[in-house]
Image (cartoon, rainbow, N blue to C red; front, side):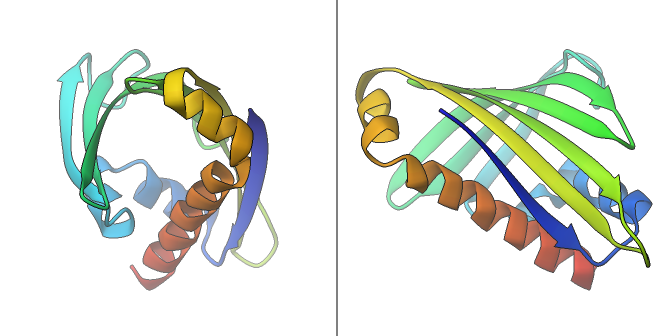
Length: 144
């Protein structure tokens, strides 16, 4: 499954990237995030990995994030591995007029087991969750 989303943030691209690229800010715009722990590699460098644990309802979901591309200020890409899901997220930050930034997010999911059935039957759930996080980042960034 693939999809692409975007949102306009009323801040300069430099400020958006400064806020986005700081792991200490994750909990400020991802309230479901219970913990973030660096695992390997140099923080912020390609190949580094981190463990993220999310609380969704009464269930905890653990994933491993790997930084696979970092060409800021233009693009940053990560993969996320969980028990039955792998996804890649490519983020682009585009300059707009008057101190605005367009954040484009392209996502690819590969699922197995019950998640494969969910992705086939309810693809909108994945897209809706991604858009929710993008909107939460926009609110956080514009008020920071």
